[in-house]
Image (tube, rainbow, N blue to C red; front, side):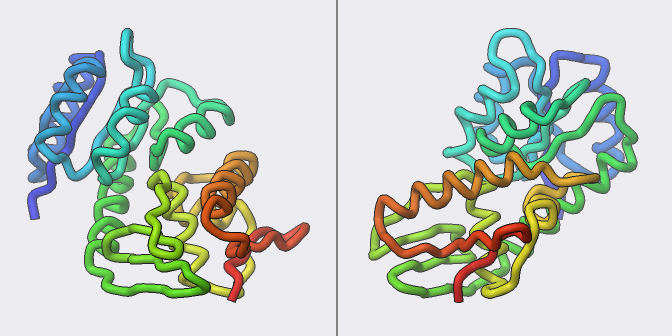
Length: 224
């Protein structure tokens, strides 16, 4: 399968270099040099988006925030530096990964491949999980409570999917972070705490049941 990559960066030389490299690898490439162009290009349904964070005008975080409800493909942020709060902000708006500039083309390709393979596994799932009025459709990536759809960001849903597929098992924040976000190195515990809090808040609108339990000093588990 020939995947389509949307490259968004105001550095035209970088766009040209990435385009040439990935076209040789058999990918279809579309480019945008700013956030407004990126908003137009998503209509062409890319399989993955590489999105520069620091662009004039509409920056990468705002682009991600505006398009995340319209698309489900992985979004990888490209940035010259990333602090803890940057990662938290990226997760909150629905990003999937961060790649620091300058980067190795081989590492970037490996990350893209990993995300695309993960997407294919998701598409091939046909499982459902039912529990106390909760229904998770792993094919459509939807969550319903007592028949009502509950909207989650891509990363929030990934946490629900990961934990619910391993009910009763305790995972620390770093392990969850690694599995659902795919970052290298240590996980971002602060970001994971905030994401779990938001998941619980959204679920609590529809039920008093608690699905994600905190195991103090250890992490989280999906209640059996």
